[in-house]
Image 1 (tube, rainbow, N blue to C red):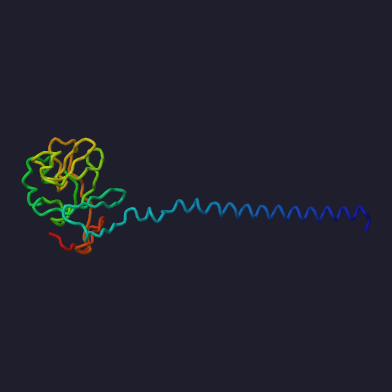
Image 2 (image 1 turned 90 degrees about the horizontal axis):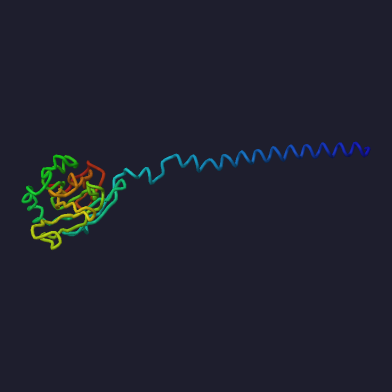
Length: 208
């Protein structure tokens, strides 16, 4: 074979190799685009946390003692769960005249909590812990006659932001900037010691 023929053959081989490498690189790039796109596409799909956002929340209340409060979170809202003393529940009607909405006709609660104690059970108060004025978290002042709130204080909550006061049914006192009572979420009981926030139905064990 002449030198010119050999050179032409080498050029043809190099050209074939170049085409192969170009095609391989293009294929690899295409695969890379698909792989890179997967997390982005997956980010459009609801995450496990997002799917659980509206799911009911189960709370063990077996160790909650009288006069204590625990917190839970449901749909990004703080939920107050209070074990109320019977004597304080029995006294709720005594200060109806001091409240903006004593019968809760202008306030938000499920039908089964549309009563004087605003609850399924007299001993347990379950409510959304955001003040209906500007959304601050009211603090607990459960002792009647608390020295900060005065001798006639029946027990309840006071908002630290603007001073709104609520009784142990979450009802707002006259003179508070909050317009309505604290809201009651949907809830039920799967047993005497298990509270389910966000679910209206189910077993209402222990209901009054």
